[in-house]
Image 1: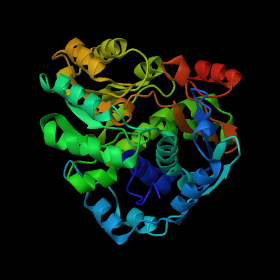
Image 2: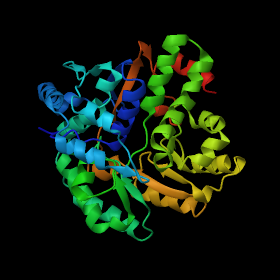
Image 3: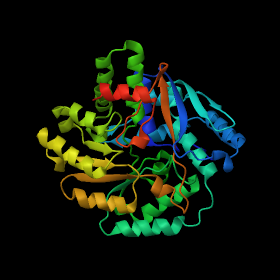
Image 4: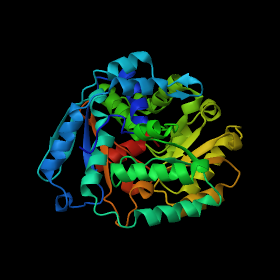
Length: 382
């Protein structure tokens, strides 16, 4: 089986799950596979094999060792996961899924039961799709040699779109041996435990998307719907405090985010995450945000995580200079650059409480949802 442990996922899925468990666990949702590149998955994959791999996930559970490890994770001197939440994980059960012969894949159930499917299913699909790894080692060596001179700080973010689990492990081991001075951690809990690295993660668009759609379904009140954005940020900060306070900025477009951010948020939160649009334009907006809120940007950090390559990391590092701290969440190009362009696949929350969810993004190709509803959201989150 491809997935052998429920720790073989990203840290942010568990930190989000704790928020969901405490506040939103029973919201009915649907997640769906979105094939951005329109790749013919049937050319290389057998739908029966995919079904077996997914069924295996549903049979896994968090072991005593998993729970013990999660309970040991500390950020800023405080434990990340509450004992009550860890107790709940001991009996965690996945929602059902539906897979058709043409690879339409959906997961339906309560938010608590469905959200963890995302990274597991994507890891499986990418591994089943992947061809031979002829150039991975030479490409990885070249990239790390390229970065070694200026040594930008990176976090390994490549679980969902990795070429395979074995290659993912090789990449992390290579980073530990040859780039430890610049490696801040990994998002993958399994490999963080294996190599003694700090597990790291921020938050995903899912939190904002589901809560906004849920509120619209409940109240049809535009103001309440808009306020869910701050609600999520407030809950996150209350739960995790300053050490894990990186604001995801583009769910409903960064223009809305920068207008909506309060002086207190700008002061209290550690930094921002850029995940779409131009990183250079975003940097300028971030610097302006801190200037207008009377906050010294040299005390803050931007985590860049949008389609990074070694060249783009160096370009952004040079552009930001010493004006603000930087870190790079490096994903697909780190763990699935082996000579062939992988398909662009995501699994997103598509419905909440029966209402369609929307992601606006700063990159048009990353916008998800019905066209009419997208325009409605643009007006709400203007």
